[in-house]
Amino acid sequence: MTRSTGDVAERAAAGFAEQFGNQAAGRWAAPGRVNLIGEHTDYNEGFVLPFALPMRTVVAADRQDGEQWTAWSELSDETITFGADDVAEAGRVTGWGAYVAGVVWALREAGHPVPGARMAIASDVPLGSGLSSSAALEAAVLAALLDLGGLELSPELQPRLAQRAENVYVGAPTGIMDQSAVIRCRAGHALFLDCRDESVEQIPFDLDAAGLAVLVVDSRAPHRHADGEYAARRRSCEAGASALGVAALRDVGVDQLDDALAKLDDEETRRRVRHVVTEDQRVLDTVALLRAARVRDIGPLLTASHVSMRDDFEITVPEIDTAVEAALAAGALGARMTGGGFGGCVLALVEVDRADAVAAAVTAAYAERGFTAPGTVTVLPAPGATRLN
Image (cartoon, rainbow, N blue to C red; front, side, top):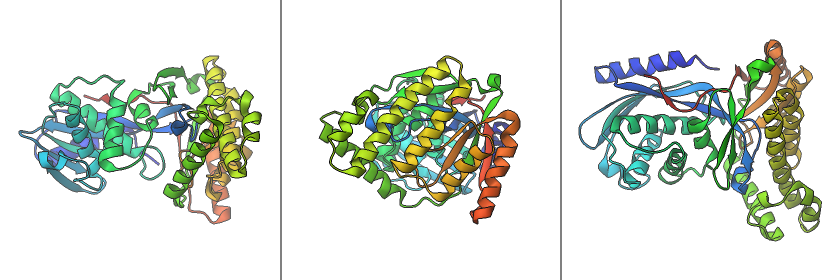
């Protein structure tokens, strides 16, 4: 599913030398991310618990004169160039280059004197699998431009700026979780993020010490109606909150859930509300267990999260459910879909010495049902965005 970070960093540096004829001033990396638990809680002002992956996007970069930016991507072997006019307003650069231009635009909009730059981009974060390849690109470009320009922007403010680049310049309605995770995560930790006030806490997630790992399964399922269904789920949640007279579903506790559901006339809205309220509680319960170093005990919470997404939020697909069922049958301590749904990835908490067997069981179950073979990789929590040299 991936190559090592060293490989991708070398590819970015080699690409820069080949495209621009000299060595880059430095290399900056940002990871993909996976959400351990807390799905569709972000826009309900609730809680999420992502961690950074070892797969990374690396930008090798150097300054160039004037207000001009040039970027080459290993993925498309395409070079784009844009100037001040292209970042004067949102949307003028399209395609993958929009994510690069969006960061320049957002920095300039915030009053920062962004230096001209040449960039070569290489990545091992799989595209279209829900592992935040776009946020990784934004964060790596942002880190490079901040360093090249000697610009001051605190880690607390960087996620919001990167999110604004994606929301406004690119036009993709992402929440704050992806950018927060890829910028602020630490190795060996999960990031407990309160999506209402954007406060974070680094939660120890020492899988190595527990003899565990997370197996990430790329379902390879085509995303089915994801945008329209995502919007529909969000509308249901907003309708539920309005009917209950709260600012967001985060304000309904599990001890109030039965009374809240009794006030809702629509069965579908009841299911959507039940998922969000119970999912927020599962995040809090997972955090409590990890604080107590009871890593193994989070498995049932992961599985309960998946059941809720499957039955109450109705965002899974057959490939996803097959991966979860096969992983659990092969001995995973817990497994769940991660991401917005209708495709994407599954994560399973596994014994290190069982990881290969669980991966093989998922692959066999796919073959039995005639699905495209999944991608699998075993991961430990990695650091967020950083300069490599």
